[in-house]
Image (cartoon, rainbow, N blue to C red; front, side):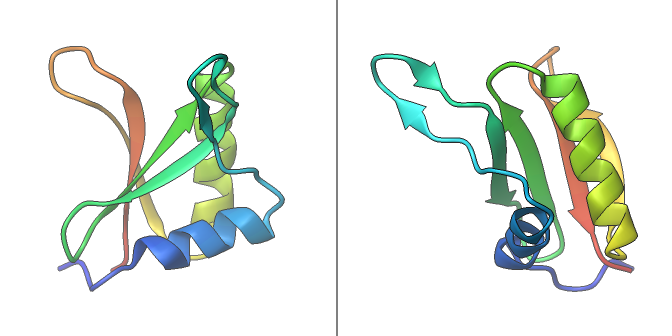
Length: 89
């Protein structure tokens, strides 16, 4: 069973790995980067905003797996955004 996980822990790994978080500008849209979202006590979702979604998610997956997280690539229901489900076992 998955253990408790915090979005801040996932964010710290990505930031330490040199990845930049995304930011939204109302005039120009999303700057490319990651976004970490808590999804309950045992799961965190990671998204890539801006251009290069597939490459960004793959790079995040590798960094998070190297840090010992369990990473499952996924897509939101109905053909929505791609994301990573992050858990700890």
